[in-house]
Length: 228
Image (tube, rainbow, N blue to C red):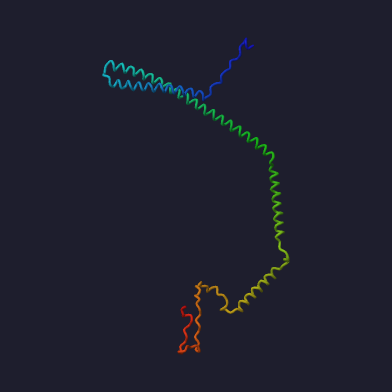
């Protein structure tokens, strides 16, 4: 069958936006090179026209320069068209990239949504509420256990508060009686705390007695005033 009808020719894949952009940029570069060469030639003609005398030779140079200017304008129009095509391709490329990003984002969101749904099936609000209630009951039991373990022993529960207050008053009266039995000059005076420095301590001088006299009948010199 292939020999009779022939095999289908394999079609090349259509060019991508990047391929078309690269091809147009190459054409634009070649056009820019031609415009650059025309500018150099026009600069030479301009110098020749400035140096030539008015006459047929100057007019001939002007005619060639005008012809080059027409070529330059044609190339400039082509370059502008290529720039517009490149701009349009860039816009299409940006739109295509945006759609690809949107597709990837949608795919990621769908996968995440499916995963969340699967996780939600394993987690129930009722189970969480029951667990919270159980935790509250366990904490209450734990507090009761701690209070029971911290209870003091040998303390009667039926203690009358009036008896305790009476015992406290009697204790205060005993303390006042003991403080009154101590002389006032021995009791600490809290108000007379002047924070005075302590007096220096020196060896006490030996008091002179009337019976202590030297051989001349004079009292002896105290030892504290003697220097070693």
